[in-house]
Length: 421
Image 1: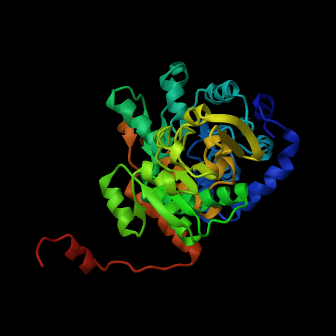
Image 2: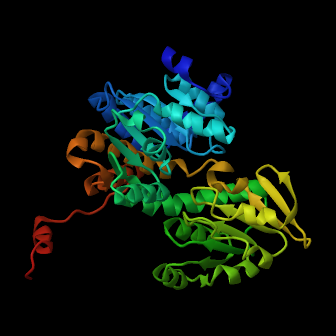
Image 3: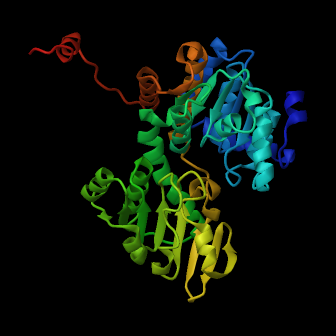
């Protein structure tokens, strides 16, 4: 064990390391793409002598990504991007493996922020960010911590929105690869990953049946598509709410009812928000909801439905089951909130399946190498994942699945590149 990691780390209980190691071993066995990249990194040592700070949901799959980056020669520091998704046993296991960890489950909000700052105080050369948390700190109160920073990679839609806002103002100081926008991320992670894991967390937490219920999916981006598709597969009647006309037409043609939230509020038994925006369910909507309606968030931050508005009309708030708060309203109705409005798939579950995160975290690993190899030429800004990296991850995944595909002949390539027949 690295004595530096052991001495510096702040975790809840180092005695949990053996349990965390079993979790990491399990996901490693189901992440063949990342395993192949680890082998390459061990040989090439692309991060030798560099410091890498990571801010992601700190569970087993993230832990294995950290170990892959470490295998590439990096000195790795990691923190959690959500106070309720951090798994203490996984944190302890990472410390044993020589990774510096600043994370614990459900810290006080101020401590949560302080742990993020601690993870940046190593003054990293590279970062992996989630939701723009690191970027916000570095461009806000602690610009002194980015004096060595070459760049990094961002995991989420929410984070990319923040980065593009910084870029628009001319304030973004380093290149950040928009991993979320890669095909192998949003097509699979956002759709199939969120689609399954959101319902995993919902069902595990409530122990209720979905079949026959009316589910309102708020937002029909890639995550919303996945949540709606899986709700339909579970036997639910699905309503979609949207502000984007094109996505609303798509939801309609996919076979879902589409209506404004104020109307959907009257029908929903279960509500899942996946917008990346704030207060898409608010005080205008709560008076219309059924007694027993359940609210869950699968967007990034805990602002998608307004808890202050709900609390304002409640006479009592009590925890009725782990990760379920009941808001008893003055008119006698009860509305239930899962996982404090935080990401239901991670705060009340284990996140996306390992096979899905295999592709996403493979992209993170190769994107980090890409930005390190090219940061001088790239310069500050939001950077797209090169298509060849995207395709490489997909081809490696196909190999792991034992699936073969066709290839274009030279004649076919020439035909596609020609304007004449």
